[in-house]
Length: 369
Image (cartoon, rainbow, N blue to C red; front, side, top):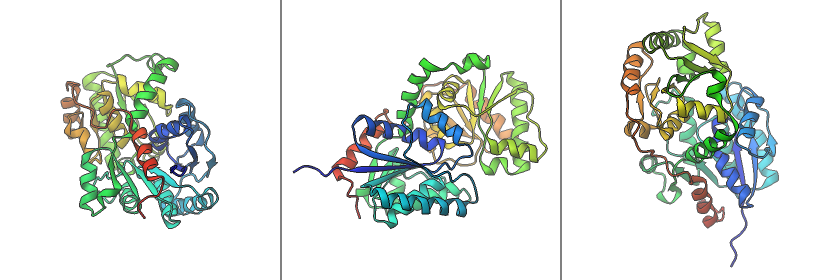
C-alpha cells in the first residue's frame, strides 16, 4: 500500500527563520515534495529579507503577508487571521514553524485550531526568563505542536519534564548547521566582505545587539557602550557592528554615541555575515542564533545577556554569559579571546532537514492528534 502524499506548509517571518528553514525548503524542492511557504514579513524591511532569499538561492515564497512590525497582540492577530485564510485554501498535511517569534506563535496557533499537525523546528529551548516574549512564544508553541524537533538531548529532557509525550519528541540536531555549512560554501564563491571592509582574519571583533532588554534601557545600553570603548582601547582591534534599526533608533533617542573603534555598517546579507562570523577574533552578541553559529564555526563568543536558551554553547566552552555590566563584559572578553578553538559542535552534522522530512514521511503528516 502506497503512503499518502503529503503537502507541507512552511511559515516564517524573520531572517533567522529564513536561514534555519532554508535547508527544509531546499530539501523539499530537490526531492519534489509538495510544499508552499508563507512569509509574514515580520521584520522591518522586506528588502533585507529578500537579500537572504537571494543569498541562499531559495525560490520566491508563495505568500507574503506584509504584516510589518507593531505591538505583540496587534502583530500576532494580523498574522493569525491571514495565515488561517491561506491554510483553509491550501489544506496542508502539516505546517512547520521554527523558533520563538510572533510568526511562529500565530502559525502554530492557526494550524492547531484547524486540526492541522504542527512541526516545531528547534523545540524545547528555554531561557527561563518570562520577561522575554520569545520565551512565552516557544513555551506555548511546544505545547500545541505534534512533532517537536529538538537540537539535542537537553531539549528532549526539558520537554518531557513539562509532560509532553515522548512519542512527539525527536532529537534531530539543528538546521542552523545545515544552513551554515551550505552557506559558507556559497559565500566562498560569491563574496569577500573582509576585503570590502578592509579588515583581516582574526584581527577584528564582530558585534550584534538588538534585544529590547539591552537597547531599550538607557542605563544598560550606556554600560555596554562603555565596555566596547574599553575593549577597543585595550585590544586596538576594530569592532565591526552591522547595526540593527532598533538599536540605531535607540542610540539616537537616548542621545548616545558609538565609541571610537566601532565600524558601523548596514545590515548584511547572510553570506557576508557568515564570513564575518567565521573569520572574527571574537563575537560579542545578544542573539540566540549567533551563539549557535559562532559555536559551529569555532569562533569564541561573549553573550551580553544574563541567560541563554543555547546552554550547550556554554557547556562545550565556545560561549560565555557576560551579562551587561562593563566589568563582567571585559572579564568575559579577556577569558574568551585566548580560548583554544577545540570544542565539539553539539548541534549535529548538517543533515537535520533530511532527518525531519524522513520522520514526517513515516507519519505521512498524520501527527499525533
